[in-house]
Image (cartoon, rainbow, N blue to C red; front, side):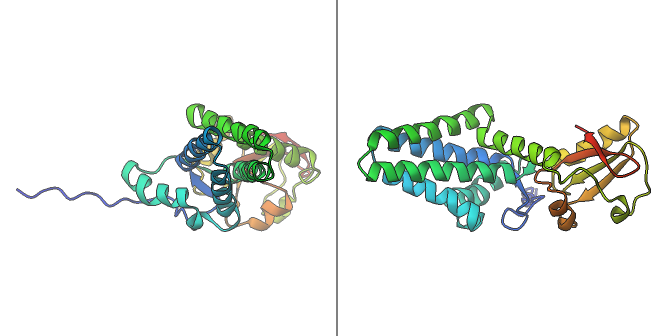
Length: 238
């Protein structure tokens, strides 16, 4: 009797090339590493750990995931073993990493300059927030990013009007313009939901139309707005 062969592991998104999205488990794994390492640094006073962790976060933001050791370990060891999680927009976790890097490198700077208490306080904040994200999936830095993205999208003046002609769409009242990405899991749920409500939806794939994403200041997908027949934005659709 022949033994069944294991199915090869396949991904929806390449972690090193499809940078607009990320396996939602990857940021949690990274936060677990940061929470653990930062807590050790705070309890032992070994502030060079702040430098190591902060540098790794900064490297992942500015140079890519393939240069971030915890990221590589997750994608090469953990993900093939446990499978790929839901895909999410990568920009919110990236913003959270930037904040974490600033706090950790500041903690290292203060500790090296002879202010260990300040360093310990900054490190404790990072450890607490990273631990919160791991245990509850509430990423404070990500929520800050989403809030800023919404404020920028609706109140920044970039989405007062959408050029329907540029989209190749005939003018129609209460049309929904939905900005999506093909690898975004949540994006696939939004359009059917809106269509079930009787709305006409026009999808814009930001991976192909980066020019439109830049033009309208779309920093987070899925992002949907209702527009009038004149192209003026009436409001956010979700």
